[in-house]
Length: 495
Image 1 (cartoon, rainbow, N blue to C red):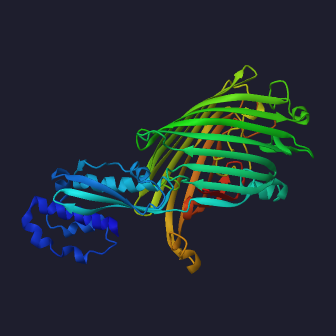
Image 2 (cartoon, helix red, strand yellow):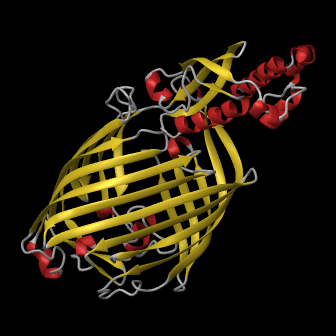
Image 3 (spheres, one colour):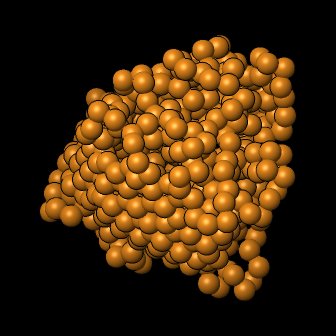
């Protein structure tokens, strides 16, 4: 509601400043404007408004910017995402674009349910801008239950829904811990893996709000280990005692001078110890002598993200480049370069076209087993090959999809929750989609696997469900070029 009001105010100020004689015509004209009217219709209510005048007419001075609705979040964190400051002047069309861009950037912080920027007051050509937000809930202490397998299908089909392959415990997420968009994570995990991890991230610590940091400490041990890949599936070794222990410690500096670009510089130390049975089963697990492997990792990341809504964008571009060095000895020496990009276009009001690509290389090509993991791990995978992993040292994929929003529904919260929540309904957006992907992975030593060094392709159709806290559930049915097909489930969220 506030958004079109701000457009009307701006357009009215513009019209009156161009020709005061139209004031009489404009008087009372805005009372009949529907609150849901799009901008192009709103502008019709200004008798002399034209697109050309919006670009060539007078400019408006932003006198003050007010942030409202931020009970915990500091105002400077919100204003850091706004692409204008007090004292700057813009034309009407520029302001409209900047308002929209600012709302998108604020939403991409994942701190708010909604954000709206509008002109709340004006005096002559001077404007008061209001940034109105509704905050999310930031503290999530809850019991933790998670699958250790790469996806739900692998756990259900390959591992027969074994409860020995789950982690449980306590997970504490405290977003926006001090109101500076900082994040505290504490995991106490039992089950498949016994693990303790803690991390703290603060996006800005300097006065100019350009430099930030992240600190991470993690330690744990487990009864089972993925020691090899055979027939393009992970092979596990389980013992009554602990077969693997690990520790990692490190930190990262972040530099973000502008809105859309971020640079990360990281230094970590890793230590992994395995049982003798692992090295007997796969002598090339470490490739270095001994049961203990310890090494540093040094990396640089470049991230560019200009999207309207990062968890499920309708338009925009994102690129992620990572260059890293692991190990300093000849026995454990790895240089890596990984690159991902995603481009999204809106096709009309409800259709979305997405193109994605990924490429990576590991040098030298002769690597131990732990350094050969390529596709199928974490978020680097191909649709239609969820039951498989593809190990190698170079390769990538391209992916395309077209989605259409089928419907959007808001489910009211019960009265008990309404009194304690900042929102009254839970939104659900449902998309139908068609997709296709193709890829290739090179391995100098494929061993007992057959997907390496071959063209990989799959296509399918699916449904995406979006809800609160960036929750996305993807239900997909895929067909690949090796005659395999199946129903696959994926889930992502901000917690």
